[in-house]
Image (cartoon, rainbow, N blue to C red; front, side):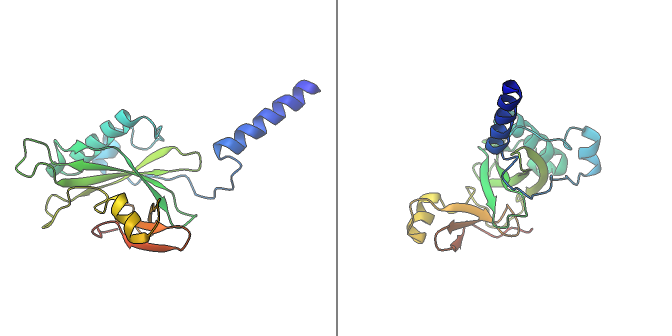
Length: 187
């Protein structure tokens, strides 16, 4: 009986710590894949969000298949973007930059978005190509955290999205005041 109670207690603590008992109501993200991505395989499963090399490899592969303009783009570290709506998934956004050999080296070429489920796993979602944008950015988010902190008069602004992870806002949680984190890209 004591062993049963110990196992039950450990399981309950594990569920509480992993988000299983956190009341998360976000549905598991289901990717909508192009025929090319579906043919490659592997884009319809969850990934470990802490495995940055794997996410980078997937981002590069998805970007190259989605748009020939993104072939050779270089990934930057993933950026966490929280959903303003508790019923929508949080996201990891991988910025892609023009390669050093390009005449546009250092410009933001595109974004690859992974959506997260209640357990925190990452699912491929979408690729954005900005190579034809007239005034491309050189960072993502365009407005740095320090500038947002000054503007919002807070030490720790939060990056969140309302319509698209590609167009996040910097927000001050205590007041709900937000400012755009950069250009508004299509949803």
